Length: 163
Image (tube, rainbow, N blue to C red):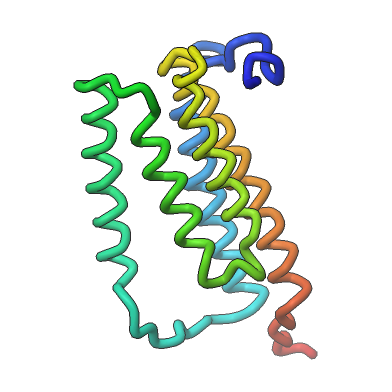
């Protein structure tokens, strides 16, 4: 199915620059710049106290699970993309409490889970990983743009000193 959607391999470098490294750099820079924009537009935001598992603990669990799954993918060569399923599960679970706003993340998790099963129909793990990375990035980009649009519609801008 993915071969029909993208008949040529997704490029791994453009003008000698690793596209994965470039995408990460652009993503981190964009995340930082967007944070500055939100602070300027909406002001300083205080986090609501959260009684659940801390974000640091959640992140540590996901990273540990991903590393173990990645090791399983590399060493055991299972008939599915295990590390892809871990990330898909994380997206799906993370989206669940706030699915009213974050349905895109839930949908991306489901799509990525299905892509993780493509080796069962003969797709190579390497091609599945490339396709997965592309769809993961595009899914996060689209969901992020929708979140941004929702923020702008839902929250008033801070009034300036001159207003």
